Image (cartoon, rainbow, N blue to C red; front, side, top):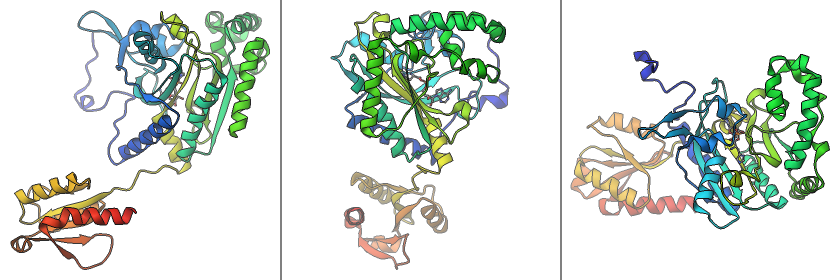
Length: 427
Ligand code: HAM
């Protein structure tokens, strides 16, 4: 039986999900535009996939991960299909690749909400938005370097400085098989510390490594490291990734225990950690290679790499570092309607048709209220449509940023006149 919300809760967004209102939303627009610009510079095209997928699309990528096992929002639709709200962005991209078979390398970026029924806290939500990028169908360390560089350049462009790039290699299948055995033996030797989690340690020995449990810190510290078991091929790939990052001057730290949270990862993995955020939720972006996923979904061999970066966390980090503020409210013109009626409607249409941003008050407000609204709006110009001016075929304009007396401009010229002023001030 569904749990009925109390009346007062019906008007609240669901637990752990945020509304983003203006003016804060202007930061979102600016941030997404910034990311799109970087993604285009790196040669990526936008990919849009549905918010829901067949349950199995995600079940495959996370049989052993909490995001899929415990936190997924899945439901049976009206046609009896089991669908899931996307908990992450990579599986849908690979599903779309397998379905459409575009030419490789396929370079795509995306913007999408993701849903995870976690316990909400600052920086962790049940709906969060990710910007991400993926390159499908090529195994070249230079691609890894470029992928990491995209995330790095974008975060630097936002003004984030207190960030650390963590890098590791999870090797190939042979590496992980070797390492798995060693690690299971190590967990068994310490079964007294692992306690009730022993079953999980046997099923997925790597996941224990990124546990944040304080009472295990010693155990994890001394655990054998995956890096020691890399095959020659994996070690060579990883060395070239590091060389590439050094060539670009991107500082990184090798993080031997970074294994990341999904079953699909292979080879290079990375995370961008913000020093300005609480340690438990300090990852502002993360990703890595997933060289087998396309095959596992029934597609061709297509080694791939990508990352996702959480918009809410990026903005929290920006707040903490005092960077990337909301753009100041701005309008080119605010029209004050004292007598215009239909002509005011037309005047606004003319301004907007010339690419100017323009607004007005409605409902026959007093002149005083309209001027106050014009001031609040952040408009550069007030355009006043008064009865006297109308009878003489003019409108009055006032530059709200300076103390100059107001001017009169012929009604039929006002849109072009404001456009010229805007072009002059931006040139
Ligand atoms: P992820 O590490 O689970 O990776 O998420 C990527 C980023 O999304 C995180 O670094 C964080 O900034 C943000 N994020 C994740 N969960 C939450 C949450 N509950 N609340 C707020 N922000 C969150 C992935 O999702 C992979 N698909 C990344 C990837 C792409 N790997 C390869 N390609």
